[in-house]
Length: 203
Ligand SMILES: O=C(O)c1ccccc1N[C@@H]1O[C@H](COP(=O)(O)O)[C@@H](O)[C@H]1O
Image (cartoon, rainbow, N blue to C red):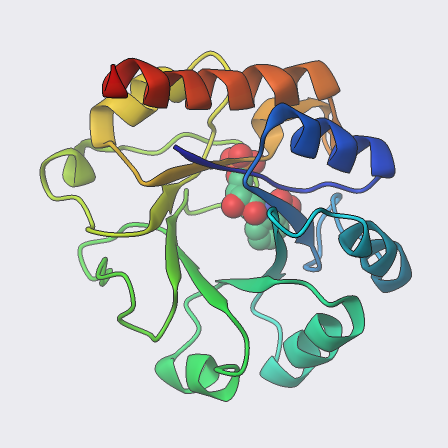
């Protein structure tokens, strides 16, 4: 199970996530209580081991702003929220891209439909910690590299994985003590739960 922990803002946050075995760590560059400034992000990203993917999170920001932040921080992949059109994905094709979207009857859940490498299915209010109805994808799942997000936490991630069998999971609110403040014990508990499921299923 691929695990991303998002909204990290301090060296301690990154150390907790990487030490717990997270595969990806996220930094929010959109308007948010979790927003990180560029110099801090650049420093944290430079210290992340190469086997851990660094993710920059954007919401409805112009492509030029996304590009500038990506280049200034050296982040490994761009997570684009806000139903950007095909043209924006094409404009940013020099970068590794993750398409982040909520699920509606119109959502194209084909991984790569916009040229992206990864697909993220999230709640309509990204980063809110709100759950959403997984029923539609339980029977009609995307294929390939897609992550599930939206209100996950150490106590519910097992059930969510069992319900829709995503390629990976992503968490932010569910590993915080208060909005924007990561709880390192919750990070460790979340990664252990998600990874334990993989071990259980393969045995
Ligand atoms: O975390 C934010 O503030 C945020 C802002 C803008 C776009 C996305 C954001 N977060 C993403 O939301 C999910 C986690 O959601 P949850 O808090 O666990 O319910 C994750 O993909 C974050 O990158």
